[in-house]
Structures are given as C-alpha cells and as structure tokens.
Length: 583
Image (cartoon, rainbow, N blue to C red; front, side, top):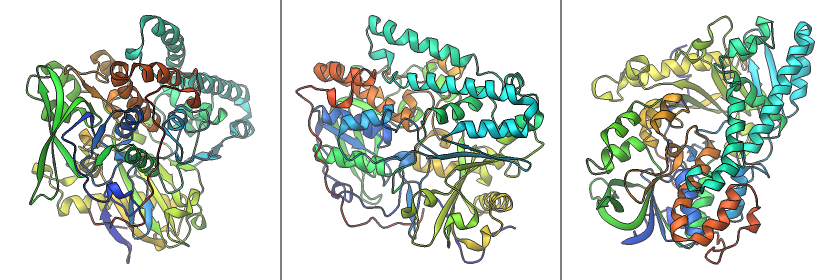
C-alpha cells in the first residue's frame, strides 16, 4: 500500500522539539557571559555530563547548543500528545551498580530512575519466534527442547555468554581514560582491562564460522541471522545473565538531559539553546573562547565568549574543518577523520496509535524482525523489503508516552545518506517532493512488514506517522552523514587515532561520542566525565584525585569528597510547555 492511511498525519521527525516542560532558564535565551572557565559546544548527554561535573567542581561553565532542545539524540519530541524517543532501545550501566548510575549519583539527587527490563529481545523471523528475558536459561532450555541434537552446544554457548557478561561487568570499572592515568595506574588498571578485552576479541570472529562450533542446526543458527560478528550473539545474552538491561526513565530519554540542565541551572551555569558556534577562538596555539550566533535569522546576535578551556561535544569534522582556523589541525588528521569508519544512520518510523499498543500484540521487549532465507549481509542491505527491523512499543513500558487509551510504536532500520540516490534529494541534496515520496514508500513497506508479522490491523489504528531519514538525523544532530553514534572500533580507526580527547589545539578537548569508539548512553557519559577530568587535573587537583577513584570503581559516589565540590540545587520545572512545531 503506497501512501498514508486515511486520516493520519505524516511529517518529518524533528529530533529536538516536543512540548515537554522546560526549566525556566531554558524557556528563553539566557544572558551569555563575557567570559567563563569552560565553554562546552554541544548540549547532548556527553556535553551536559561534562558541564555538570565541572560546575559541581566550582568552575563556571557555559553550554551552547544549536538545537531548540538539549539532549542531542536523547532530546525526543512530542506530537499531538504522543511522545517519542529518538534513540534508546534499551539502557545498560544504569542499574544500581552501573557506571552511569555511579556518575549520576555523584552529580546529585533526582536522577531519572531506570527500572530493570525483564522482557528484553524477541528474535522473530518467518519461521521462528524466541524471547530473551532477564532469565536467559529459559531461552537456553527452549532452544534445547526444539533442537535436542544441539543441546550440548547450546549449553556451552550460553555458558560462554555468561562468562562474557561477567567480563563486561568487570570492564564497567574501566570508566577512566588511560590518558588521565600515571604509568603505575595504567599498569594497575590498563593491563587487566587489556587482558579482558583480548579475551573478548578472541570471540569476535565471523558469526557463521564461530557459531558453527556450537550449533550444527542451520535453523537454529538462523535465529542469529543478522549478527555479523559472533560477539554480537554473546553480548545480549551475557548482559541478560548479569541484569544489565534497564528501561528508559518515565517520560522518555529526554528526562536525562532535562535533569542535567536543572543541575546546571542550580549551580548558576548557563545552557543556551538555539546558539550556534561558528568559530573556536585560537591564540598562540591555545583555545581561548568561541564566537556564537543565536536568535532569529532576521536579527541574529553574535557574541564572543572568552574561556580558559573549550570542550567540543559535537561533530568532530565540523570542529576541525569549520570552527578552527586553517592549519590548526594537520591535514592528515582531518583526512583520517573524513574517511573514518562510522556507524550508520537510521530510518525511523514513529507511530501514534488510537489504541494501546499491547492491544495489537506488541510487548515491552524489542522485536528484531528478520527475513528467512537471505544472506547474513542482506539484513543490513538498506532495502526496506529485506533489512532487519527493530520494533518497540514505548508506551507499553511507559503509558505517559501517549494520551490515555492510546499507544506508540517505533521502528528503526539501518540506513545511509547515499541510499536511494541520496533519498532522491537530487543536486544540492534538497528535500523536495521526490524525497518525501521516497521516504513514504520506505515507510509503507516497513509498516506492512510489521503488520504482517505482529499486528495485522496496524494500519487501521494509525493516528499519526512521523518518518525520519539519515537527512533528518543529520539536520537535528549535526553528525556527519546522520551517524547514530560516531566512529567504530575498527583497526583502521584505532591505528589512525580517530577517537581521542586531546586535540592539536591546547585546551581544546573533545567530549561526546567523538571522543570514544562506540556509542550509547554509557559511552556518552564516559566521554563527558573524562573530558571534564582533563580540566580538573589542572584546575581542581583535589577534585581530580577524589573523582578518579569513582571512575575507577574503587569508591562509591558518597565517598567522593573535596572542598571545592558543591551540593546540588535542583531548580523547579516550569509548568509552561514549549509549543511543538512542524519540522
């Protein structure tokens, strides 16, 4: 079926706007300081974490975010009472002993709660349907009943996954960047972590070759048909064994950045939205501030903010190519970045339903929907008829995400900017009628596949449909090619030193996903904490000495003490809402 079902609204997903309540300081443009200790460019989770750590340590901080909402990929949006997350499938390291929760506990009270997730992942193909829960032995035993000839191998596979989960749990203590360690610390923490990493890499070969050592049945191996690396088979099961799956907080993922903004407001720091940094000021090889433009396009306000440090928690290519003076970064470094292996973008369909999503057959788990009988690589093929689909019903986990008696469903698929002749944007990559028609064709195929596999009456209940392409993600995050994370941990990237905290410009540090390999909430929080640690090492050495033990996992948040550390003062949430507009 081509075209939208009659009566539902179709739009282009704006990743940074919804009508959730904002703190008073975010509802209007705040005064900008003439100078401060640290300017953070980018108000995603990494940038806000870095700013909060520094502000708690007594430094003056100004966060500049180009979008109309803080949070980056966690900003979410609202449409006619339906609230949509734009990134989170599930959370890790946000449980009581997780590294993200440790950092949030250090920053202050009121961090959004993340309940444990029980139903985790449903592996659904045309000939199989299996559910991974927080009791993974149930899945193991179901596999053994269905494939008795592989019982021994199934038990060995799950035992290996459990060991991998234990190693990953131990690695959560490796929250600190080795670049902030002295030689003895690198030996004490780095060598054991390297040993764990090497052990895990041994199991990161091609899935079919590795999995065949445990499972002879092609039908059972097909359950893991989308995983190109064997470690991707083991990790979800290993996390499940060790309780490392959490739900997003009530109200959606945007509650994380909103909480951090309230902390910053209480400490007297500035978070300025709709504020685009055009230049990082450099004098004698040292970053000394930024030039920022904000306000209406018809009457923009351009200001300079002087600062002792600049932390760039935004697209790194934009920083090197557009914000810094020519010659500040070696050309070879820029070329390595521009040719780096990045995570792909996403094609996302967000549906508002006129009934609860569970009424149509959806559960709280993520459903990975695959096709039978196609090559492993075709599940990443960027063909809407073949590509693997990740399906969620967020309102089932959190009823506040939809109006009473209604529900939400989101569907994600890997996608690239170059797909479909750049999504039919033509010369100049302008999003015209052909672009809108092409993305709707994709959406129709995706919706039909979900309806056929899970909810036959889905189309009759769609009240609202929002569609996001890689162009949408690039527009609202600024990430190169709309990448959903940043650089992959490939040999090419590691040899080229693509991910890093320090830059060729003194006192210009990197935060957010571009400082680390991989992505997700844990990586963003880790990057934010470590970029702040570089500053604290020089400016607040007593805080640095106390905080490093938290990042190393040797003390609890309550045990981090230093004279400069300030108590959190949460500002109240404003009752007024920000009006949602089309994007």
